[in-house]
Length: 93
Image (cartoon, rainbow, N blue to C red; front, side):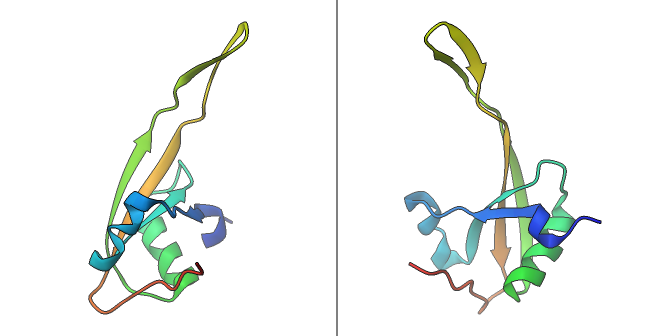
């Protein structure tokens, strides 16, 4: 059985994601096979908050070259989770 910790890989902490925190929006790196309902349940279970909305985006990997070999960075799925009014995720600085 898949656990909430398998769905949510990490909380993305960047300068751009920090601009959305006052609006109650947080960015997560999630499993590519997970859907919005699973992401919502996982965030509510792990962080003990109420989720209002979940938006997802799959970011395609880029072609890279190292010396003579051509490779590709992996595709990732990102979720933008909007919390209900008054909810907040406490993150260590």
